[in-house]
Image (cartoon, rainbow, N blue to C red; front, side, top):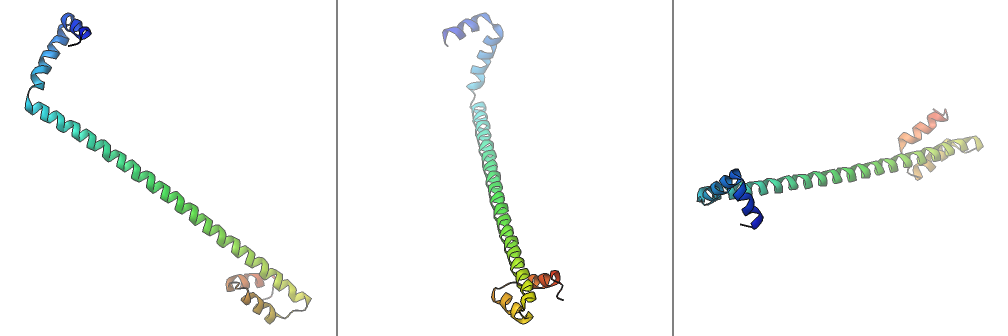
Length: 128
């Protein structure tokens, strides 16, 4: 025993009793085995908790990446729809300059403007 603890051992009967009983208990194979099992379970529980935390972080990162990608693709679709609507409105406005409705419709189809946007643009120009 180190000198500081020996002095404490000599002056504190409670500590002396603890040390004596600890020596007896630590010498028992059943107690040592149970203690090692407890240490092992503590380590396993800690590893399990760390694994769960890592999985949660991974799922959160995947969810954030998916949300960002979904938002980006929605933004691209909305932007494309707005662009298509602008083209369709300009084409229908050209009817006033003498173009025929069939020419405008053919041109919009050539630009792959979706039917729902063409119809919405026609409605805005009151060409129904």
